[in-house]
Image (tube, rainbow, N blue to C red):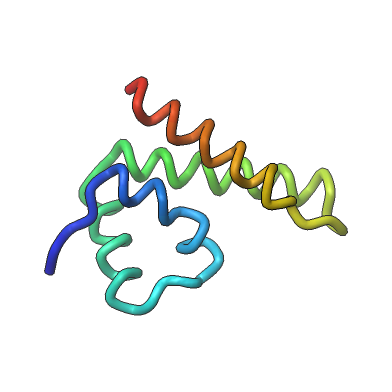
Length: 81
């Protein structure tokens, strides 16, 4: 089974949290997170951010633009180390 790279994983975080990955992709994602502490922290931070946003605006869904900006910020942070 081919493993995801860290960059590939970052691209799939929202799909993972939305339960939009097929079973083989989900298993690869979870295997990577289990073996990569940095990606595990990245996923944890993303979950915390989503949870905080839901609590602050429970009746509204994030716009595509807002989600894109959040993803860009997470990618930029990942590339800085």
